[in-house]
Length: 204
Length: 151
Image (tube, each protein chain N blue to C red):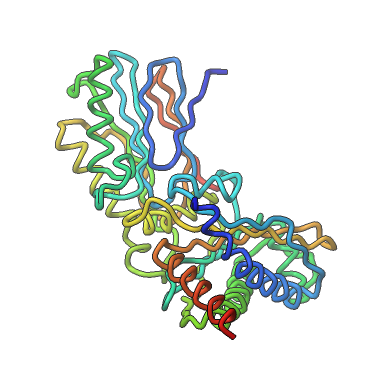
């Protein structure tokens, strides 16, 4: 079995977390949300940046680190114009202000809620104890914002598990990308949990 | 327009003029631009960590990537006494997400400076630290290093 086949069982789990994230975004913005891209694969540390798009673009980014039974991070990225539209709908403000720090604060709080929804569903589904850090955000060159985290994974691992989701809000014409990056021991732990759960289900 | 080679994360490239070398999305990473004006030969080395561990990709680390770059520059006829260096990057992009994230940029700068100065190579330019990401363009015709940030 190659690595891609081995990740097959993960797709059912990530489908649940993706639905939770989409639902959280829809509730926060009051808009219909569609998932336009959804992939899960093992990626070399050096290739992760290519997963997220134009690394030179100035992007609003929020990061939440995951701890407990699983180690990784959630990385939300969207262009500042889309950030403006999304935060405007979230806090019901008029679209007359320019992009300001307040938007990043709103995005941080949104990411906190989205991460909570995803991790809560994962925790319940696989009986894992999961913790999330406070969110931290910046608006800067996309590649630069991601690279300290790749460095942290890069101290120990060649590859990481990358779940990439792109959510679109058709009414706004805006979209946001969400990367979940999980280290290999945590990926193994999740796969073992899925295997054990499916065996238990068969035993019933 | 001169041909441009883009160097990604944890990679390096050594080349001769008239090429232009470029590396983008530099946060806590450090990009080292090395240049020998007598040969018009230069290199960009984009490291993400200071010291190699666990036999991982040597191009990822300052202490293993830079010796590979020095060897390649010598192979192309450069002498270390003629080489000069510019350092770019080493930012601290986020706070509040742990000691590693806070300090890795500075650790990278220290490790690269050490590796460069141990070889007797002069550092003639540094745009390091702070909290901003950077892109760098290195013109091998002139040795000029141009750094851009979001603003």
